[in-house]
Length: 595
Image (cartoon, rainbow, N blue to C red; front, side):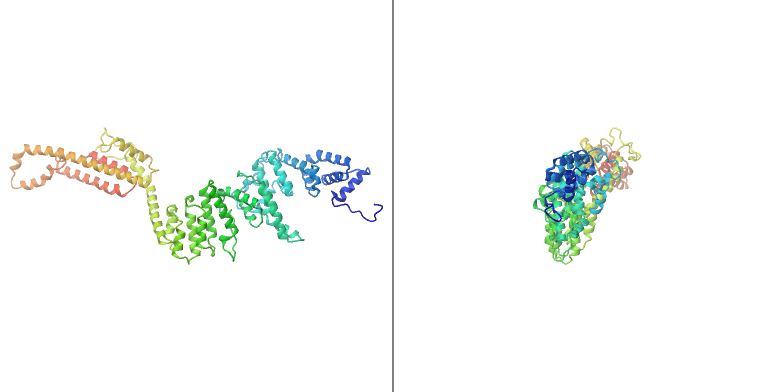
């Protein structure tokens, strides 16, 4: 200094600058040295550079006994170490601060598990973001409610990454570690304010390019920090927010592939609002935008891997198509390709697909009949809801063949709805077959129910096996479909008809033999009739050959009328309706037994 006039410049490799050199000079000349969290790291590195061992040992003692015992002091020292690298790393100042911060974050005072009952803690975690549309500014406000999270996300990424790794190494639960990563990425990657700040502070070069470069580096590191397996700790909207941001950045292929795989694993839990929507471009179609192409690749990956939630993904994809089909530049062939990304068997309902195709036909009225038929060929009318079928039948833009198919399905839905609405009526009729139940059938006077053969268990016209099958049908009536009920009712009616015919023939043979004996015994009196006798004979002749020849004429007519009413009910109610006819058959059998 005596030889050189003026100021002496310290070398660039000297850690800590002139302030650290001044503290070392004071220490060498015996003056008192004041160490604090703001200068201890620089003084320690400068003492190592100048080989001042006594001062270095004093700095290490201060770090161990003072700095590492306080959250705020350790955080300050760690931040001061950034311009001192790599000397601070070699002296283990960075690693000691990282481990201390991670340990204190896992302690009882700072552990979220012990503070879960305090107001605002759960809201600051990922649980407060589930089901919401991603908003970077709202998420920043949630992160600020926990001071320790706010302190960690303010660190440089290299230090933050090491703290997250230390948190997992020391046993903090993933449901508390992942939200910290989420808040960090939201602040430095997803926030538009941060991007504008970076772009405006770079005066040397292109601010936009430098901001994208810094965001790319952080995003690649965040993708590596995210949990490999989906644990529910990170909202699905966060993955799609990162995916949308990555489309404007130049990520490495490895990071891009990993991010898409993570999005594909969460696809079944997403909503249509989470998916990235393309911006309108006058030079290209929406279907060729990076957003649609990326989502097409992710959905195809999910389908190829045969992951769970195929029906949910199919519905999500159809909802996404509804939002992009209004593009006037979208060709019908390209729309057919997008529809075919999801196999037809994965679609549980075609309502959203019908909405997408209908919207496309509205925006593209100039399509030919062949193009409309090709698009509507992806629709399956049986998978349309009743409301969608009604709309499709009245939709003049749809092809005629599709309208006919929808009309047929609508009739099936109407028939099914009518059958379901008649369940209460079937319950009432089933009660008629059970004596002693409120609302049960009451026989008419003169036709009592035989006590030896109660209609609730057996019938003279049915066997035990048929009755057991019928009772089983009544108990499971809520689960039978229309076709099964129709076949069962038809079978029972045919069986009853056959049994009635057989009974009638037996009665006819019995009464024929009985009538012949009567005519033989009263032959002479019958031929001694006067002039009016032929009229009486003509009126009584059919009676002798009838199945009830021993009854009076008035009783015969009443019985014949009852039999005709029975067959009329069997013909009308047995074959025209498909459900609720088992009880009618039993009612007919009951009346026949009364006869």
